[in-house]
Every structure is written in structure tokens, then in C-alpha cells.
Length: 475
Ligand SMILES: NC(=O)c1ccc[n+]([C@@H]2O[C@H](COP(=O)([O-])OP(=O)(O)OC[C@H]3O[C@@H](n4cnc5c(N)ncnc54)[C@H](O)[C@@H]3O)[C@@H](O)[C@H]2O)c1
Image (cartoon, rainbow, N blue to C red):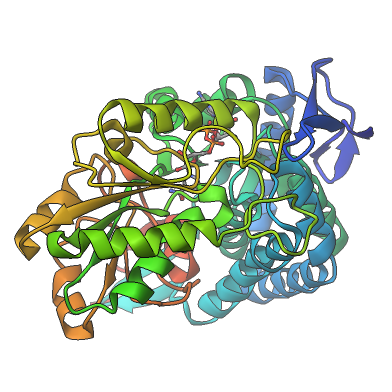
């Protein structure tokens, strides 16, 4: 059992003031393998004080100093990538190769993209005789989830450092160890003391302090809509900026012009990727009604080809889901799908037959789902796909937009048709056909999927205040 019971505050690894501890569980074995300290209100306040004290000097560093710092971080992240990936695999169950290449690799991608973006970002410019200045917003509280842990940490910390903010990070208590390695990277890179601080703990204790504290100028939250609302409520009396990246129930519209085989197979795989634990997973596939039977055939074949297994086995495509609570929640939603009359075509309740321990879920597809069913409305966060039929394109758009969420939407088919359709979808990201991830594209949600945008120049914008110095030049 490894002990990770220190916090990183004011440039040093310090003992917590709190005595509470939590075991970190490997979801593949259901066994604890490490412990962390769970911070108290006093631990959070100590970190906020350090970040506040560091703000004046860090906000006055030059662009070149911050660029050099970002480049040092990037090179250390590259060196330690596999170690970070292995840790993520152990604590949240992602298959080892994917954990290294994608889960950890995305941290590198965000630092690279932010470095590129900061080089062309207009931090200051003239507008008539007024000087427009983007200044760092101040001390940022960051609260992150377990599903793509390094993604969320990097896409907040990179723009915050690039703009001259100081920060306190509270990562998910369910997958907290990658954040400890990340803090080691920042320490080695020479981030000035107090600029980056890490306190582990739970949401209602440490998270709530970050949300409500008057010395925090902005809280950047990624997680469930439920917790995002609590954060916004706690933040309201101090009128800080609240940036939320929340849940999703993203539609994937398969147009009549699409290659059905390719589109359905890719949609099933994408929904199950990361064991279905992606906020932007395409979980509602919309197919033309007359193609429903053919789509069912393709979905069954594809789901059966997804190998579920131990994260350290190279043949594994998807590992376990993160926790017992998540496993139980998914099982309950699969049961709701069956009880409400959706057609279960592959997968279903329980673990895959060859696995009798670990939080493994069978890739599951329901067909002939209607958009009022629980499985079409609630975020499941497991490898569970709903296929819905549509007759007209107008109907497809109405179904796609009939959700409280608006994080992402997907379109498969003719490019010109997809371009026109993309404007009708109420979602922060629309992905057309087999487009690959774009670390410079804005990422964030419409409706109850959040507010604000991350990634590239949009992240830089998010972490700044805009000042107008009127009369900067004589008229
Ligand atoms: N939109 C996005 O960018 C995005 C990305 C990844 C995950 N998510 C969402 O995250 C959820 C899964 O992650 P999770 O289970 O870790 O979510 P969660 O909301 O339970 O926890 C997220 C973080 O919030 C903290 N937290 C919980 N309650 C809090 C409170 N009352 N006050 C302050 N902090 C609190 C947790 O400790 C954790 O650090 C899904 O709903 C998913 O869609 C969204």
C-alpha cells in the first residue's frame, strides 16, 4: 500500500492538518492500493492563502518567463508520460496502452496547444484610443473529475499558468494520484512557490471552500451537473466567475447519406470508449427508421467485438468502470431500459461471462428507444448505447435537441448536409464523420452542460479579465 498523504502547498510537500484518510481502489481488482489524505477546511484555506500571496508577483511575470515555464513543464510531462498513464490505469481502470497514449498523452497535447495559442493570443491591443488588456483573473479554484483526469487538470492549469493566474487544484478523490505526479512535474519545472497548490479531499469539504472563499476569484469546475449546481450556489455570494463543464447526453445523427456500416460501427465503439465514461460520449444514436434493422445487426456485431478485460492485458479494448457506485448506477439504468420496454439487443445486466470480479460492464445496446425513456434522458456514464429511429431530418433535429444537455453532437454522412445540419444543433461541439480530436477547438456546453469554454485560445480567454484603459492615447 503506497502512501500519498501530503499536499503540495506554497512550493513544498506538507503534512495535512486533517487526520482523515481515504483508500484509492483499483477498479479491476476491487482492492485498495494507496491512501491519500482528505483535506479539511483549514487545509484548503492554507492553500488559498499561498495562492493569494503568490498572485501579485506571478501576475507580473513577463510573457517570455511564462512561456519558458510552460515549455519546461511540457518537456517533463513528456518524460513522465508513461508513469502518469500507468497510474491513471490503476486508479480508474483505463487499458494501459490507451491510458498512456490518450489519458496521459492529452496532458501533453493541452500544454502544447496552449503554448501555441499563447504565442498568437492578443493579450493587449489598441481600439481607437483605448487600450484593451487581458489580465489574469486572479486566484483560481479548480475542481476536477476522475474520468479523463489529466485532460481536465491540464486544460485548466495550462491556460491559468499561461495567463499569470495562481491556483488551488482539488482533483477527484476517486482518481487523485495522477494529480500528485502532475504536481511533481510542476515542482521540477520550477513553478514559483504558491503559484500551483494541490489539496486532496472531497467535494462538500475542500470543493465547497474553493467555491465559496472570497479570496478565490474564479472557480473552474468539471464534473456532474448536480455538483456543478452546488458549486455555483456556493460561489454566488462572492460573485466570482463560475466556469462549469458538466454532463452530456450527446446525439449522433446518422444521415441517409451515410455509409451505415461504418457510421454505426464507429458510433458503437465511440460510445463504449473509456468504458463509456466520457462526458461527450455519443450515447443516443439516431438512425433513419427504415435502417433500424440493419443498424441493429451492425451494432450487435460491433459490441460483441469490443474486448472487455483487465487494464494490463494488451488485448483489452475497455477496462472496468471506475467504482462500485458507478457499476451499480449503470446496472440500475440498464434495468430501467429493460423495464421501460427498450429492445435490449446486446449486452445487458451483470459482468461479462469471463470476468467474475472487478467493476466490468458488458457493452450494451438498446434499440427502438424513444427519447422519453430514462436511458435516453439520463447520463449513464457506462458502455450503454441507445438507438432511436427518425423519419424526417426535422424530427432528428428535434430529438437531438430534446435534452437538458448540450455538450456535443455528432453527424455522420454527406459533408455539405452535415455542415448545414451542424447549425441547427444546440451543442458546444459538433463532430462531423470520423473527425479527430482538436485541442484548439472550443470545448464546453450549451444548456445544462455548463458555461464557458476551454482549450487553446478559448481557455486563455476564460482565465482573464478584460480591462479597458480609456484615454490611453490622446484623442
Ligand atoms: N463537460 C465536461 O468537460 C466534463 C468532462 C468530464 C466529466 N464530466 C462530467 O463529470 C461527471 C463524472 O465525474 P464525477 O463523478 O467525478 O463527478 P462529480 O460531480 O461527482 O465530481 C467532480 C468533482 O467535483 C467534486 N465535488 C463533488 N461535489 C461537490 C460539491 N458539492 N462542491 C464542490 N465540489 C464537489 C468532486 O470531489 C470531484 O472533484 C459526469 O457527469 C461527466 O459528464 C464533464
